Image (tube, rainbow over all chains, first blue to last red):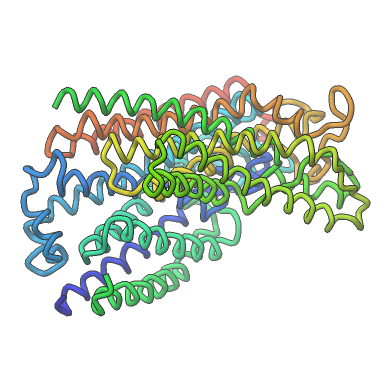
Length: 261
Length: 298
């Protein structure tokens, strides 16, 4: 493989990992307190919540790549399969003719991830509404930035809110969008460097986990979304995730360059 | 082409059903074993003086535990099916069984280890809890692993997802763990563990750890918890997973043929929009029905 292709693959892995790390900051994580209706957000840990949504994005992106490569969309994007076979998908001349296919795969990752995130949040809200019988509010803001509803009167005294109000849900969707896009770009970059499908899936999962955990350490526990004061910590995560994904990308292209796979 | 779509839709419906059962079993298993978020209260209880008879498992949190449980089951099934030529249904069942037994080992060591660490607070280790609850745990872990292994296999075989089904089982295992943690564990943690608190409020921070010790008849144990959560939390978890599996497969099967694949993306975004609107309606309903806890001063 020529150096430009390797460089583009490295850029793809770095950008994919960075998007994942940034997306995790938007997801409303309540952690263990949310499972006791003590905090706003979805009651799972940061890492695993982001990974759950990214996993569905990855499955969706894998489906779409397979459809374009050898399935029902093969006729609509004829350049994709030969580019993937030659390893010329991520070259200066390969991206142009395949741009439609690349955008479709990224969109597939986004849609899968957003769907998972919204179902997780809304099913939890159904449980909060009917089994716990609490309103869905946040204690970090007085008025919901998106709907303008008053929040503090509806918060149980002694808690930090409960459920996932609209602002947190929109934040979750943005987080799902970024994480899904990142996962799809990761998978595409790996598949384009002639890794087999299972290997590419595995490496994508690995890079996803690394960035997810880094972002979760930056958040240190719970975050409610973009309206939370902890969101201002995002510059540190951008630097850390870029470096981490870059290092992992170096490993990946080293494996490709040495011809191990 | 219509036949392929009909076959795929039928498989997707079966996958949705498998996922619903697997999701419910997953949440029940985490209620039997008191895993993940709600277990933080069970862990805290002896330290604030509330000795209990709950199981105390928490094998690394639900998503990771289920990811690897289902991946192990599916990987063993793959090995049995391809190397020994055993029928796939029997392979999946045997794989799920071995994975569930392995999971029970982790559960037992977790229980013994965690409670030994709380000896200084006076918390005893109840061997009868270990003997009676662990088999229920194995049974539900088996159902969950089998369900997820089965629909991962169908996704790979019939729907044409290119990942091998152990990897799909791992991804779906993480998703089911996340669903159980976000949905079912709230029913356990906020409702059942604090059954003696008034209905209709969250848990104040000062009440953390003061879980129910005396149940409806006798001392509370994790069997009571699962028997309660099976009525709401577990089916809702299963429904959440089932609708995820079905909606994602449905939109991909039916709408990929439109607009060079973009039909499926538009369908997905419309589904997301419907859910967001439903959430807003639910939010308004809770605010109007339950009302504020205190009136505004201004």
